[in-house]
Image 1: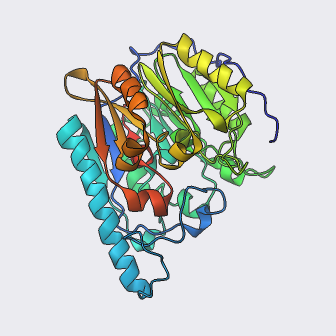
Image 2 (image 1 turned 90 degrees about the vertical axis):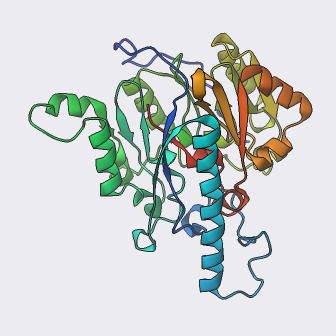
Length: 353
């Protein structure tokens, strides 16, 4: 493995700015229905969680269906899966869910995973992120960015220009950096402890370590950066498939990092109140056990959202840990999105603070 020493948290330069009371999770989310979803050929080079051999029903893609019929079957399947996820969020958790769609002409096959191109926080900031693949950059549609600006009061006027510049953090120029493009794909690349303001980041082609440092300084976070690999010694493309952080618990794919790195991560988690650290293995990471998300449910309950594949992969002992750290567990079945898209329930949800 390429050696990459885990960095102990260092305080970002902006950490002293005043902030509202901190909470790990939110009750409001932004989602894109996969109305024009398809396997993203541009992403297969570094997202090794994607399957290129399964169709919408799990059968081999070479089963002989015409391309247009296969596309229609796949769209129907993933739209149904996504609707079931939205239902879990709205009806079971009690979340406020804003759902948008996309069209073939947008050229955005991965739009169902919006948490990579923007994030929000309790200080009313919207951050736009540099994306590695061109068709993922197209997900930052003008209408969606305008919706975010309007929601957070960032529509440009002379009166609010100064505040707007402080609260709209646009890092997308890094995609065209003349000295070499650099990428940092939102809360895919950064797993955030929003209470203690610690950002965990595994370095990859989609997570530039220097950009992560810039992000931490700008947002007032401490950064724990490290290298993580899958069982084939390939770099893990996004941090949020190998770990997740909640208010009282966390999930970490222990064999994906060195023992030294694990000790740094675990110590940081324990010191910030995560009494339950659920260690998962490579097989469980592949089943999206790391791609889970805490949301705030009714009466302030800490709810952990996971996919059916993940729930079926956690052991009884691990579920006991999870039930000790979270008030409720909610499950949605999205197998086609996971297999073909290479992302889980966390990837489908962009948090609105």
